Image (cartoon, rainbow, N blue to C red; front, side):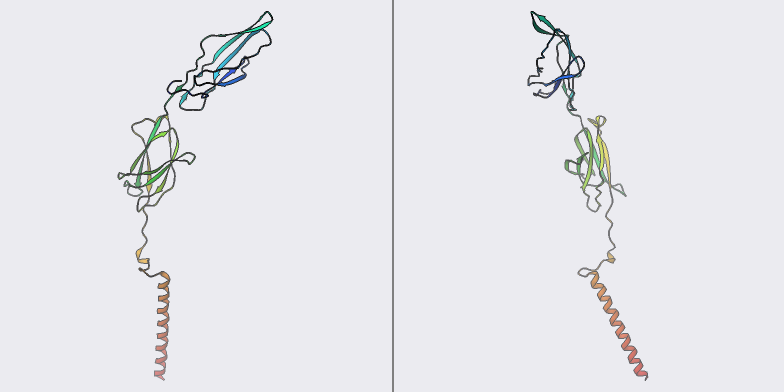
Length: 242
C-alpha cells in the first residue's frame, strides 16, 4: 500500500479453482499478508488456482487488478499425498491511495432588475440527499462568496436569508463537482437573483392608532347624522309653509 498506512482487514482477496469458482475469500492482516486455508486432496494430480483482489468502492484507492496463477502438484509418496505449490512469480498486490480531488464554486447574488451585486445573502450547502454540508455561507460586500474544498459529487445551495429589502428565494441552486472542475484556479460561478420587496401604498393605510374598522364606523355615523339633519330640515320647511 502506497500513500498511506495499511490497516488490518482493509482489503479482500479471493482464491478461485480451475473452473473459476471462488472457494475462499480472505482479508489482509496488519502486515499486509494474506493466508488462505489449507486444502485437502484425496487424489494425486495437478491443480490450478487463481488469486485476485476484490475491487473495493473507495474512490481514493487504486486497486491492483493483477491475477496470479498458482499450480499445485499433488504426488503419492508411499501412500501419502504430498502437495507442492508452484508460483510463476511473487504474489504481491500493490494498492495506491490517491488524495481526493477538491473543487470550488463562486456564488454571486444580484438584484433581478438592476444586476447590482448584493451583500448579506445567507445560504446553506447540501449534498444530493439534502444532508447539510455547510451552513452560514454569506455573500460579502461585493456580492460574492467562494465555497471551496468540495469533493467530487452533486450539491445544492439553499437561500436561508435574503438581503434586507429583498424577497427570499428558496429554489435550490444545483451544481456538480467532477474531475474536470477540481483543482482549478478559476472556479465555477453560480448566480442567484433576488426580487425587491414592493412597498404598499401608504395612502391606503390607516393612520397611527386608527384601525380600518374604526374608520368605517366613523363614516357610517357621519352618514346617519347627515340623514337625520336632512329630515329635520325638511320637516321644519313643511311646517313653515303651512
